[in-house]
Image 1 (cartoon, rainbow, N blue to C red):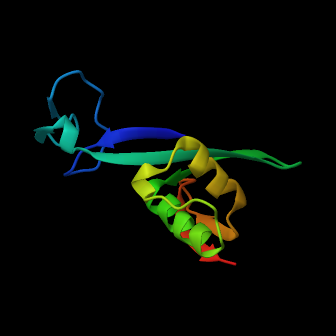
Image 2: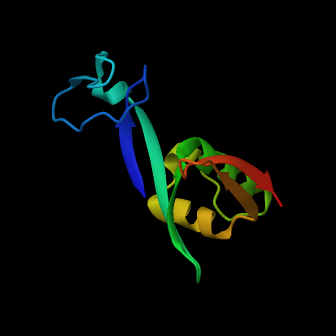
Image 3: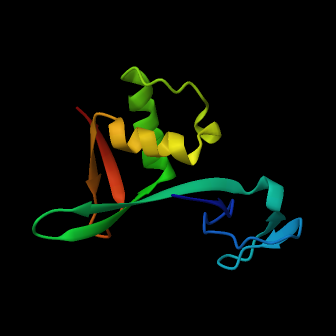
Length: 113
């Protein structure tokens, strides 16, 4: 699990800095560090008898899974932005849903079961 600030224009990961004003290394946007969006990425390792795969789930899909989790009587009642790493891990391991991954091994769709 990794949380990081991202650029408000291109959504690239912004390098951590002690400065209040930062410049995106991808698109050049200068912005207040405190106004950067916060993103979450979860890397999941799946292992079968045949192979092992590393897959990525980004915050938009995690948020969809959180919505489903709450509908399925999850015991977390927080805003998505308030979730801890442990909360996200619990959601990913217990929500009753299927996540579809694209050819880049990134989650692209959630299907409620």
